[in-house]
Image (tube, rainbow, N blue to C red):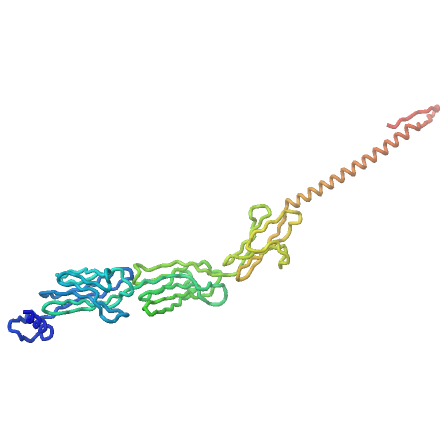
Length: 388
């Protein structure tokens, strides 16, 4: 009986139109049809590989799955399901599960936590009696989401030459990502230049450069990098602020609040790293120099006058100045001068008064000791006149 079945199997597979055994029914000799669907999945997700027989037959004996990849181009078994329902898993171990129905001729499987190494051709084979073994191939494409970043390798410095203002990179993606820019008001100011590279694992890196002439006016302008990829659930939008570096332009000096304290600031990118204070420009003698931007002036009569602050970064320097007029010091000096003049005047007056008093006393003493004689018209008499 076994030999008869094997012979029937041989006839149905290789000679379906030849009847060589009298008791075999040729109506049962036909080829089954196995169908499957290609699949695409992103790394880290689960992939369901669909496979089934669409023309029902009498007896299913085995469902077998094989895989071949770029690194291992030979078909290798990784899952076998028998009529008793037993599963034999080797290469993919516990990451693969039977998700079909053996009785219903559904051989679908579920592959969890997919990696890039899982990409390849999967063969789904049905062994059915009496038709024999039939199979179909399913292509599993593994998508790798891009690693996206926005920035510059070298800072853009204000000048007259054209260069890269910013770069948006979508790296190590499979397939290649689509990279574009939302520029707003800068549409007519800059242009976009894209480059694409691919590595040995068929992973693509797309670099999109914003090209333009760097200027102070472009600093802190807002742009947006837009990345589209089938591995992303939605397009990725990354906001970026242009960073254009330039030397100090304008230096501002302001009062720091305390009397005699001043602060030096400058419009520069990056911020100034050195401040030099002096009462002369060009600088010949410094009041202070270094990273400290503040200056404290002692309020004295000599503190009035010009003060200069030179602010610098790695690209250049600029100078600002102010004239300090200490009204309090001037008024104090004036008050002391008036006080001294008044004191001198009082002293002079007292001296003059004392000398006058001395002269008067001297005259009085002399006149009292020597009486004055006067003669009237009628007779002569002596009168003593006193000087009071």
